[in-house]
Image 1 (cartoon, one colour):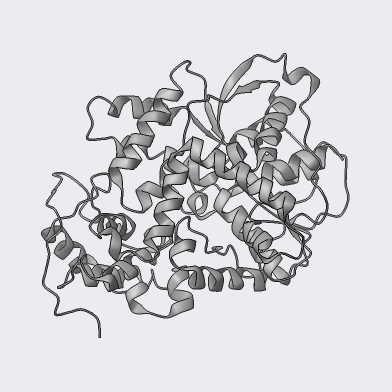
Image 2: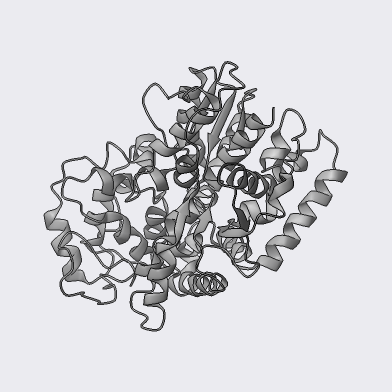
Length: 435
């Protein structure tokens, strides 16, 4: 039995006039009990969210469903309970529930707001999550950890168990050494006309992603790109964990980092793009930054969308048999723009053949940022389901544009002894062109 008898501790009151009756103001990360009652009553209990929730599919627990969490919040629950913390952290924040809900009840924003109320000590694996989040928000720390990790990998023997735990990046799992992607000769002389928000993985840990992105942009558009040094983590990890102030601080830093010009801002990470687009909502209650956030969001370009507009048709070369599977990041699949066609069209244009598809359609990988730290067992079970379907394809390669998804697939393929590899879409396309 759950904690039905725990005393009711009301969440902070912030009723927003004129808002949609099926949603809450997620940018404020607070909910009123009247809002909860209204949302709970509007939930039809139809089960649409249970049919798409990756966590529920592997645990079978009603309390892990969006409707279950909504029901719990509408009853006597307490953020001081560790059970409460465990239940509300066991969500990937993938957005599948909102996409499937026939009444468009914003259970995703509700869940993030609930996390804001949970004391740190009541969150599962709080120390590991805190370290990961702080590393992402401190560029110097992340850069230092990356150098330390590389030095350790050079010295540890191949059979070392510690080496396996430290191997988290595509180049570490490669069956053969990755060939660095050189810049085109005219890249250096091409004037920069596009800004690049690289994301933490491409900037600090897997430089091939940023090099490949620069090569492809210049190769197809003839434009150079500029990467502002003052950019930092997009803030998604902070926001998803319920730390609104930290997420807002990072948003202001990134907006400031791109004020030297008015060029478009390209990002090659799906999760970063999704969160950067939310800056106007995140800073909506800040009169000094709300308009700047809107202008920033209007400049954003998602990698596959942009490149798809630059490639007119298949180059007509390298027509080898293509056995590549494109993995849809949840942030693009369930986002407002539903970016699923551009990456597939891009692969077909450049490689001459479309990517393979899973038998049962797109499948969440179970990474979810800090979710994989808080709930590693659930994360692995979700990944196992995706791997089982992937094995039916006999593919040689998995490509995606989400940093978290990329790491999850690399680890999943390695742990299951698969010979297939995973690449960022930019790296895969750049390598294909340079064959």
